[in-house]
Amino acid sequence: ADLEAQWTPVPDPDLHAIRQPTLVINGSQDSDARLAAGRKLSEAIPRANRHEVPGAAHLAALDNPREWIDAVLRFTETE
Image 1 (cartoon, rainbow, N blue to C red):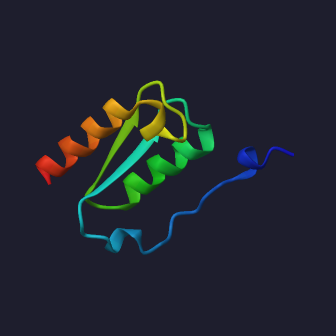
Image 2: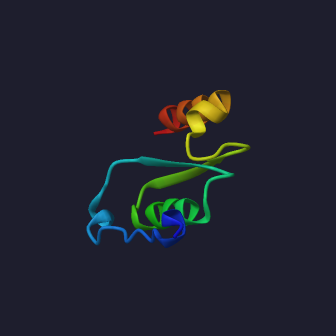
């Protein structure tokens, strides 16, 4: 069986208590389950921002390092 297809993360019910700015990064080519997890995290954390790195999978920082770095820098400059 495909473990990735069976993986359905359940966000911690206390994520809403996180008050720090949070950056959630997914690769645009990541699995559906991981993309869904990123969306759930960014919705559950009040000050979360979400960014999808184009052309990247789970290792977005390696697949598209320039875009990953740019996303992190934009986030740190605005927060």
